Length: 158
Picture 1 (cartoon, rainbow, N blue to C red):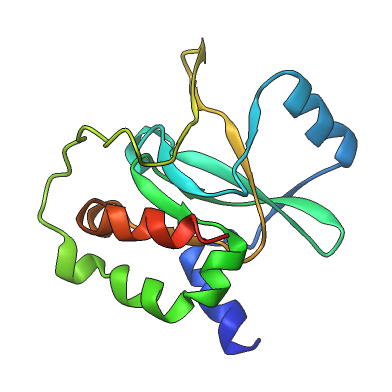
Picture 2: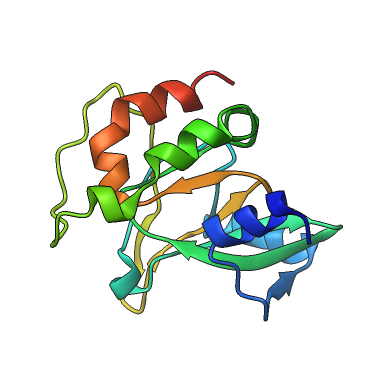
């Protein structure tokens, strides 16, 4: 496995026991508004990992696969911007430097692109699925808060 894919799998917290979805199932999820197209990136709003997180699906090798989970207040950079800025994003995404303990939600500036994944239909499921491209970059909640404006600027480049 080459270095790019090792980094990709690390950033996306890949579950190697991937659940696959047919195109028919994906279309049904869209019709029922249980999935969001997250390929444009942004600041994702939704449950934390401890509250089941936000499950994401990636289309790769002709299959839609459930491959991981992000949490509310993580920033996801779209594929084109991520590939062009991977090195800088890797510097910004430093949880050991930025972690300050208990995370507190904060007021998001109005100019920041947000993606709301919350669902209130079922008490057991707190978030909609999200559809991603295969090379997006997830930034942890602490580094996101510290570098939010720069992340949004990088994401808006494409």
